[in-house]
Length: 200
Image (tube, rainbow, N blue to C red; front, side):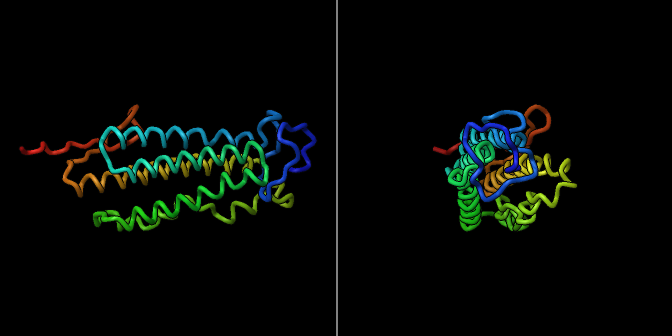
């Protein structure tokens, strides 16, 4: 929290939002350690999705969605590492971009199977009640709070990856590419397609 007396590389905390994690407890370079490192899986998942979208020949919008997920995770890392007001926008602004990208993906011609996933444009939204947990009055929940937001990052990274994978699967079905789900390392699903041969 802001009352931490540890010397900080970034100077005093100026952000309007802090979570229950103690500031600079592990390093003078990282304000909220767990909230910062919990974005690493999000970046890796987005990178895996991006590589798959390129390799399978999906439209650019799918690459843009994965890149957007990556930008959001990196921006969140920057914000939670510094807790600076200016850098808070590197976390919050990409959330708005992400919402707009998901909405625009739904406005493009898509198959009916996507209509069952109406909650997916809302993936990047930051639940307002999570922000409440930063107050000093909530010290009783400190153990749960410290890891709560970090777990939220990890789960949202997985959710975004699964959403993009689902969208890619539906698009491949629509295009007649015979998609199937394959698993990377035995547990991480990704879309593999078999495109019909071009007739000459």
